[in-house]
Image 1 (cartoon, one colour):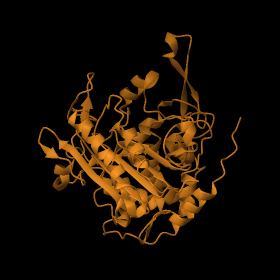
Image 2 (cartoon, one colour; image 1 turned 180 degrees about the vertical axis):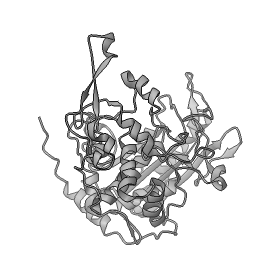
Image 3 (cartoon, helix red, strand yellow; image 1 turned 90 degrees about the vertical axis):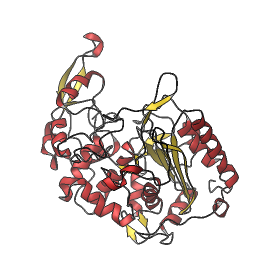
Image 4 (cartoon, helix red, strand yellow; image 1 turned 60 degrees about the horizontal axis):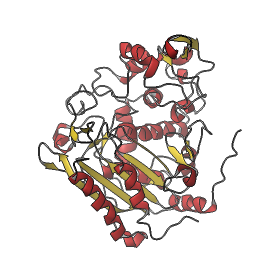
Length: 435
């Protein structure tokens, strides 16, 4: 049964309106303002619980280091670096350390696409084939349950074309090529999310992707995969600009994001935190240099711009981006989106397809609808996502809150520190705006 849309609670509506009217607190080249936690209804003593807990995990060798950031009411109340950026080199973590943010890139690509929607260059219901003709006749892999347990499949034409909205909501049916599709995707050189080693433009990769069978029919399932990489290519075609240039000129420079790149400038390479992995005994060790371990973010071909998982950033840079969204699409004098667009992006567009109790999915973000059903802290309307490298973020418009947790750990081996960061931020709130 289709659920009726959840009405926006008056408190959440008031918070959104207030956010849109916040004064211009930061210009492009200026630092974000800072204040004491108690000045915005939070407890410094309770935030210290996070510091103690994270340090315990570091001392126990379960994670090398972290950077955490909390913003409330447009001001930084917590920015902290703990542990090591590189244990082998003896490099302490810094608050301006650079992190591979992987799928946290998806939010920026989604905003870029919606900027073009606002300009009338693309529309949510446009077929992707309007911009990438190879997507005019996509196919879907249909498993044959009678042969080898469903590992074999036939290919059928998609019942309809994939739209821009399908890409934003991950209902295109496009996966990362796992399971029964693994061999086909590997053979084509389009497999999993890591693009930094590819010596070809993203458009060439996406053209090959279009020739492969997809996991599900458009609009019929929530499937996580290359959708945002395809969306990044749409941004390139519709804007006439390479994705790195669009990001730099339309988002990063206006918002003062001076440390966000697809590939790290050589003079900033020393600030890139090392990646670690958890072994079967729960101990961390340095990840290998190749592939999604340390990766090619410094010495790679610098040719492929992955909108789905390609960016490197810092806590403060990403905080500027999220604060702009919290403030209705504006940071200082720079406006990247209208408040109405931010509202549209952070509504649930997939009904129950996302399949997680209390949660939905919007145009690029997971959206909290019912904190009790989801069993997480947050107000209705809170949105966010995470990263393969064990980083995550959220934005709570009702509480005027942004939280960012950055680390470099893949695989993380079931570590629970990321989830605990969110808990310990919310328990530090002494003056809540929730009803």
